[in-house]
Amino acid sequence: MHAIKDLLRGLVAVAALVGAVAVPMTREAPARAEPVFDCGWSRRIGADTLNVALPDTFANYWMTAVPNLPAEGVTLRGTFPHGRYISFTSYRGSQTLDGLNDLNIAPDPGSVDPFLPGADRTATQRSYTVRVMPGPRPERPAPNTLYADAGLAVVLYRVYRPDAGLDPLGGAGLPEFTLNGADGPRTMPECATPPQVSDPTAVQLAGGIDLPPALPGPDHRVWSKTSGNGVFANPDNTYLTSRVAPRAGQVAVIRAKLPRTPATYQGQPVMAPAPLRYWSLCTNEVSSTRVSACVADDGITTDAADEFTVVVSDPADRPANATADCGVAWLPTTNGATLLLMRNMLPAPDFAGAIQHAPQDDPAATMGPYYPRTELTSVGEFAAIGCARSR
Image 1 (cartoon, rainbow, N blue to C red):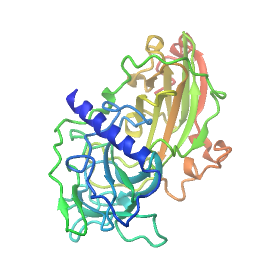
Image 2 (spheres, rainbow, N blue to C red):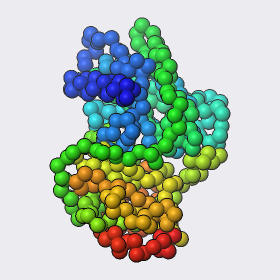
Image 3 (cartoon, helix red, strand yellow):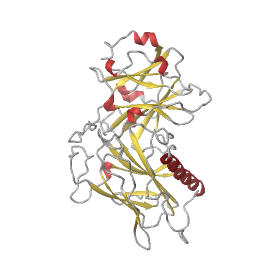
Image 4 (cartoon, helix red, strand yellow):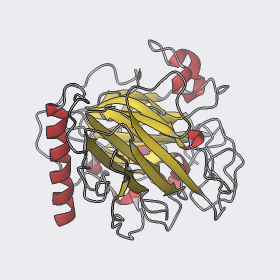
């Protein structure tokens, strides 16, 4: 509880600074740059710590914030973790400014980037160095460089789907944080990182908060394409959103073809090429932007045609066959209408079924079988299917 309170205090400080820094501060007489957080980084942010801004339960987040970012910037020295994906993203307020993902981070000499297609995920030499510099991203950016707001550099570090048995940082720790300046570099003390094992399947909205009922929104059969910008979005993701509001005794059933993604969770030795880096489907509260629960690509069962079935319902209305044993994933509804959020990350250029490649006004036109189909049905009707259809 104390850790969460400390995190909230730090984030409140960041929010206050965001409000105060409407435009970059002048460089004529800059105040001394000082990171908001003691070791440069916040405590871990996630669905089980600070559940806002539609987080993915299979991802973990850490924030840094530096007012008056010096012209010399910040240096981050880290180790590529064992996981599916990492990135650094800068923001002005909650709007995305710049992004630097694992594909664009060159390893240090003698090291390996384990996220490249075909790379050795077991390599022991896996260090990198990234710089955070003030100003807009130039037409020809410097290598391994993220550009941030000079007045208040807000950066999120993301780690998706750490390997089984590892902590949320994928066994790598947080990057060492060095603040550069005219008076020389200053390296912050190492951040304390509790050695807990990452267990995203344990995250669910417990109790929640009382909210007025939300409107169901558009037809539940229609999914809209969005970048998510404005809620600390990840620029490597594009999303489909829809809303469902099943009545008592009803369930929402979602079916689609699951894109192929690289297998990493069991510590596979090679990052295999795949049409998509990561896929997930989450249920969220519309008003609070809290996530209820998610299912990820490697935790969902498909049939012979690579199609999945996800049932969304109130826990009291969960059908007996909405279980992994029956090949059916289940997600809980939230207060009011439930926001469904489907993520596609870093698609291959030739993967036509990706959300990123779909037209804004009609994503179904190009997504084909990867476009989700949603129907409302009674608990009894779905239960009557049994397990045969879902296996």
